[in-house]
Amino acid sequence: MNSYKKDKNEEAIKELKAIFKKYKIYPKKRYSQSFLINPILIEWHLKFADLNSDDFVLEIGAGIGILTLSLVQKVKKVIAIEIDKTLIKVLKNRLASYKNVELIQSDILEIDKSLFKDKKVISNPPYNISSPLLFKLFKTKYKMAILTLQKEFAERLIAKPNSKAYGRISVNSYLYADIELLKIVPNTFFYPTPKVDSALVKILPKSNNTQILNVKFYNELVITLFSQKNKVLEKVLKGFLKKRINESKIQKIISNISCSRNRIRELTPEQIVELSNRLYQKLSRT
Image 1 (spheres, rainbow, N blue to C red):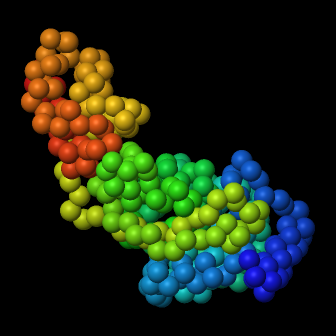
Image 2: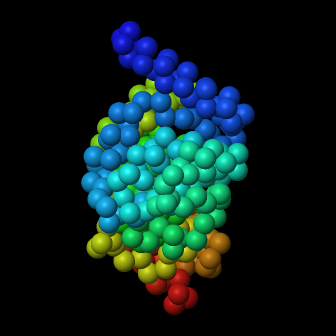
């Protein structure tokens, strides 16, 4: 980091600590709290979200309102979610002059998915909820999302079959959304400084997502498959099916699966959906 950037960061950290002192707050590890100190990330959020005065925005993990303060000046309404009740007090104070913001003290994972409907989700969410947050997002009718995520996690979202990062979240991301990695975000953009870098991603709902006959069955299958992703499909399926049908019928079902000799990590999302649908239909008839 050059001396100018270092000075700017130190200045931002000093201002942040002054806010901590004023409100008698501190970063809480249990909430995975790191606060934004570099305004460049705010500029990126606003640019890639293409905001206008008619937009409704949902912000997850509003913190002390660093991003929120910019959002409320650009859009019709911001709904800011913050789990930490001590930070809600800070937000109420810092956003008191704005009438187009609604503060909700809650866990986003517990909030009804209807809140996402027709919203642009713009956030720097805590790392520790990234996976369940994305699975929830995919089930909602959100408009689009611009999120700062841990870099490694963001790479898993767009990972291809047979790559090291390919997994359950990669499959679901491909099926339910179009995802673009926009920017790498250095860990120095936050305080306390995280151990790893982040990435800014754009997420759009996929309108023509592949038809899954039974989502519950599909989810159970995918969890089983990717808990053993380096194994051959045939072996994993035997264990999966043994809990559901008579063992004498298992081999007949597997023999009709063309990719049964492939390793799990080699299967494309389309193959996995096709496998789920075929198995569900066969098991429904037994």
